[in-house]
Length: 243
Image 1 (cartoon, helix red, strand yellow):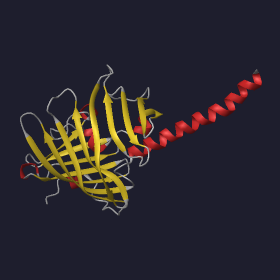
Image 2 (cartoon, one colour):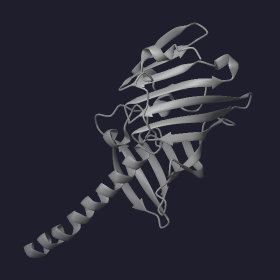
Image 3 (tube, one colour):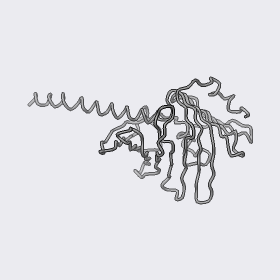
Image 4 (cartoon, one colour):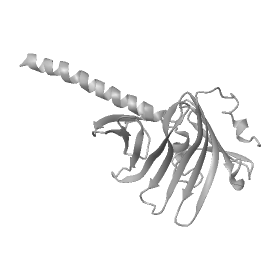
């Protein structure tokens, strides 16, 4: 009997460890999906509600998981608004009042520019691999990643789920749940294109489930990965740069 138990441990445990490692590898891929070592992008963000619509065009730069810079190019009234994230710190610059405002941790889940994306969504302050435990389910043509926050993680989400296409290992949906287990919002990934030799969804649509008629669509127009970036991009001085 004891021999049988040890045999089962010898067979089952390594397979569980392999499954856990595969889930972690897939989650790391989601973490770095649009970032790589460095990235530069031109994006459009279309915000829709029951009462109004508007479109922002912006340029973004990222350096690994640590640094992000975003500058709004249009419309004219928002031109020059900029966001900088360095490590765990974040600042916004508003040219109309010529003021840099540091974003406190309590505001990271606040709306960015009135959209359905949060400050954290835009700069990805939190590494999913570091902050969540992950399990994987095989759904035939798809994988489902189930993310549960680690004990020390500070978050408003009780669970996040990814659905990935098994063949491409690209995301189809990302679902967010509150502490009551209710699905609060869903991010849809569509329009796969090639950027710098890497196939990625070019369009992301965030739909909040408790705000009827609301959605925010982000589309990558250009995306360049793994290029040399000016070291002055990720600086507070660059926030106020006129262009």
